[in-house]
Length: 335
Image (cartoon, rainbow, N blue to C red; front, side, top):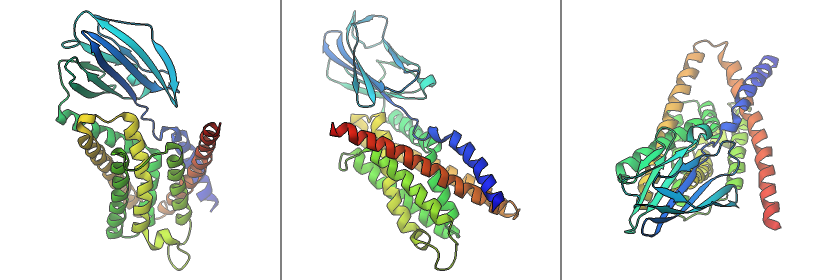
């Protein structure tokens, strides 16, 4: 067991170094609203804790007023009045700093005719031509990519899925368990996105960490006999239940990204499909690694325990860290 603990400690250090990457999609919103002929009210909302915050780059034909800056929760809001020598049609807007801040930005424009244009700006595509209306296809593609990338950089969700692979012993049960987890998080993702369910980010993040801790504790128990807990005896119903919790986390990310009001259901569907595709890639890759390790029996048990105890150590840290954040939020709300 000493070997297991040493390996667990080393793996835990490596995973802990990347723990801060869970939910690093720190989105921004840039909104233009026409209030007159070539005059606009501009809102830019960006995370307050960004070390290198992104910033809008207005068209050359436009002159912004001095910004009005105010904190709004965990974000900063910048407001300008923009006076342009001509309407925005045919001009371009860009946001600088998306690459450095590892973020995206939803651009929303209401022109002089009341038409609404919405698109997503990314580090690879930080500029938008106002003459080009975002099509439904581009919205679908953008949110598909966001869902795919989020699951692959969301360490907490990946750890939980990895735990499910270690929990079940047959391919049939694995397929059923992963499917149940998918159904669970799809349900709450949609319900929160269409405002049927409320969302409390601090509580949700703590609950997600708790699901990983409970799964890690279950994995330390014997795989056979009466010692197995409810997670091992009923893996797919519990995966469905825990999936509901993780779906709240996915919905929080999607809400922060901003949803195009004209294509809300399309964006939610694309984001969810992207999550599933990323999850399938991860499951296939990890399953292949575990299958290869089983052919070298002396390596499989130590690495298995290293992953289990790393899950436990990181989830304990997350529970403490997110518990403190929740307590601080409750304290501020009580004042």
